[in-house]
Amino acid sequence: EFDESNCPFLSKTRYPWAATITGAGIKQEQYSNDASGGTRHSNGGGFVASTAKLMIYLLYVLVLAVVWIFCVMWKYRRNMDEGATWGTVIGGLSLLSYSSLINIDRGNVVNMTALFLMLFLFGFRSKTRWIREMSYAALAVAAGLRMYPAVFGIFLLADKDWKGAAKTVLYGALSVVLPLFAFGGPKDLGVFIGQLFGFNVDEPVYMYNYGMKNMVYHLAGFGNDGRVTQNPTLDMVSSICLFICIVILFAAFFFHEKVWLKALDIAVVMTLVQNQGDDHVLIFFVPVLLCMFLEEELMIRSNAVYIVAIFLLTIAYPSPQIRSSYFMTLFHSTIVQLVFVTVIIYEVAQTIMSIRKKRTVSDQG
Image 1 (tube, rainbow, N blue to C red):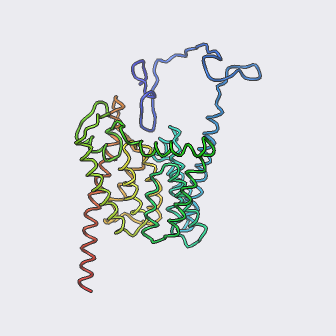
Image 2: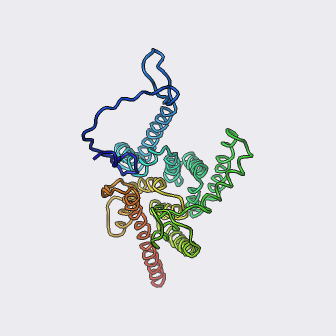
Image 3: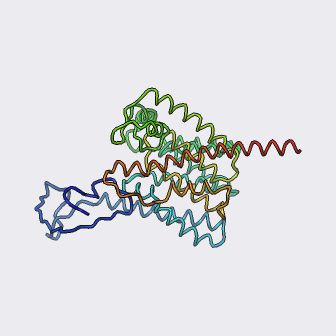
């Protein structure tokens, strides 16, 4: 329902949006050119808003969607029967993931970063040289846009692709430096570095974000309206927990054979280190989801936990209708945080089992 005290579109709601308007009448109001952004139409008609920038953004969204679907279709066609059809369908549906919709609504370019990350995961092990080169450049651009995806370079180090790693570093340096000439020049490099290392420092901690510090504060139950005052003890606890989780996930990375499982671990690491990452960072799990469809045919006992986890991190699912947008936000973030904890605990169990299996095989040999 919509009334003077309940305006659903003025709060942070969950998709799909819905509202029932009852007893609403048309209200006419006089606007002038000075009061609103826009101009009188050239034909002498009514007032027209200045939407040129919006049209450019819509063009960007459309181009990004077309390129995204084409890349998924191209990869699926090379790796499965009827891949072109499945690639078009799955690629299109992946753009309707929860985080993708959030980013389009906010105008966040992180969707483009996820596109470059997807290209890297699709091509870094290709036998075709130009595809590998494209994947190196794609990871470099992704890291240039957001920096955090640089951690996916561990794939190249694990494969001992030293030349590829060196090329990625070179491309990454160029992707960071060259855009500066379109703005203030090299002098802005210092500003960039300062923002990079100062972003998570002295920032308020929000319980509904997905970093390890956010999760520790959430568990401690501090805060008012989701915003928490810094606590030295909790900061120390969160740092210790983050270090342990990074060690666990990197260890699990080397025991996995499938790309999507390795990418899942790295994406979790990338998310845990960000104190200010909320729903928009979940877009980085969409390329992992797309790799999962390439490598898995059935849900079985060994992959069930991972598959359920990746779906919970990407799909848009219903949330309870709660008046407070704060509790609505906490509902979804609590699920995401629980998924991260479940994946970490499960990786501990899987890593221990893998070590025991290797020891058994070694003893038998």
